[in-house]
Length: 176
Image: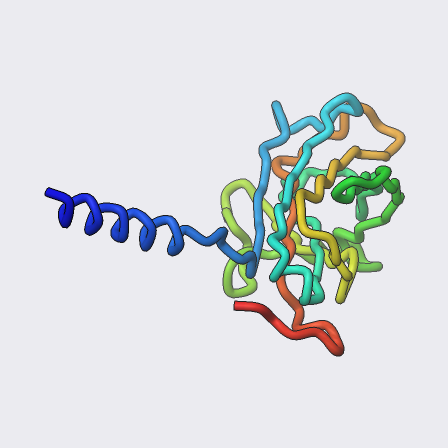
């Protein structure tokens, strides 16, 4: 019986040791805009949690936008509020281009084609920061606020955040 309890204890210890927090390679989440009309008071939030080993890397950060062909503007302005672990929030106003100078939509679906040929839906993945340094473990919170003159903003279907590893920071070693 004593041998059984020792075996159980060793087994439980092995299971607990193997339950290491998962390291982040890519975070991506998209949220639907209620009624496809983005009001000022709707502020989608995204939380990205980094483990200590994740802080050795650089990150590319993108905003995802999905809209209908009937969206009336060639761009969208956003206020992006970033809350760092244990720090004060930082707010930044960004302009995201959605069409070229001739008015042709820049967004596409898979393989460079429209997502839905009946509804003319366009998707955009727009870089807002390349090789960002996220050097503190913990939760980073990103909040998006539409900052256009029109309220609510019509024909915006989804907004999202993508954070992906861009490589190891100089003079850093990845921990396993």
